[in-house]
Image (cartoon, rainbow, N blue to C red; front, side, top):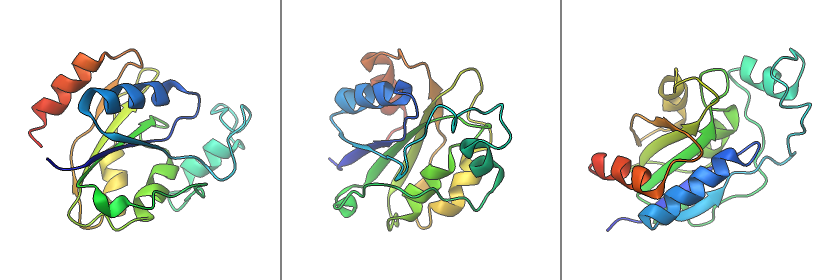
Amino acid sequence: MSRILVAYFSASGTTAKLAETLAEAIGADVFAIEPKTPYTKADLDWTNKKSRSTLEMNDPASRPAIRNVRDNMSDYDTVFVGFPVWWYVAPTIINTFLESYDMSGKTIIPFATSGGSGMGKTNEKLLPSCKGAKLMEGKVFKSSASASELSKWVDGLNL
């Protein structure tokens, strides 16, 4: 069986809960993608046009620095990448994460939490950051998704 990693960015803890449940359900390793400079509540105020998150999401070239790296990324064949949906896409820190490693030959599967939107243009915006990898369609889940629900989703991916 291939080695699987569940990597995630969580601004408020919601996506972290989902990622931990997924990793446990499928027997995967887990890795928190943490910003070098943590987000404050003011940074995450999407109604403020000058907040850090708004500025990052309005700049397609934005690549927020990551505090930590996974030193054995080459050990994984499949990487689930989790995040909260921001502006109908993944936060740009996910691009930073993906571009930090050689993803050639890996399967990348996005999963997300959202207050009401779907995945939007997530794959379109992530694809350039997944050079040489197979990027699969992702799915939005409620933070309360059960291990059984997540396992069924993964089984249906036919990895």
